[in-house]
Length: 151
Ligand SMILES: CC(C)(COP(=O)(O)OP(=O)(O)OC[C@H]1O[C@@H](n2cnc3c(N)ncnc32)[C@H](O)[C@@H]1OP(=O)(O)O)[C@@H](O)C(=O)NCCC(=O)NCCS
Image (cartoon, rainbow, N blue to C red; front, side):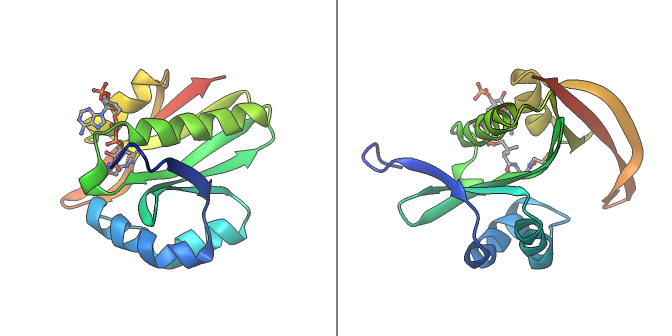
């Protein structure tokens, strides 16, 4: 990344899905399908990508209901992780929920995903519930931690 090229967060387009899927398959053991992304765009969810010049580095999707935002996915390409980009995208999603007068933002995270959970805690999310066996895992199922940020 060079200082001259600004990092932009912009709405996700159907044309981005092919590039997103490459990142998705690189960073998630149980990746979303292309249809999951295109359906989210078509459903009008808040779908955004983080890009610098021509390089798509990450993406996030949030479903809004009148009082709540639900972050459905957040991903940063492996080679761009741990440079503050996940935090930047998360801050953007939180701010956009705030601007739509949401009172809280929810998300689910795998119990084993300590890095992501740390980021969420750092942003003020609190663990409020556990969904037992919510996610598929290599050996059986894994719990999801339900986290909430009050706005
Ligand atoms: C989780 C993810 C979105 C974080 O994005 P990122 O750009 O790598 O994270 P950032 O650089 O913005 O990190 C911000 C903070 O999160 C925490 N954090 C992020 N990744 C971490 C890791 N692997 N280990 C420990 N802490 C981590 C740290 O507290 C960090 O703050 P610090 O830099 O002051 O220490 C990204 O690593 C990713 O896409 N991972 C794979 C997919 C995934 O797990 N998505 C989330 C599903 S719920």
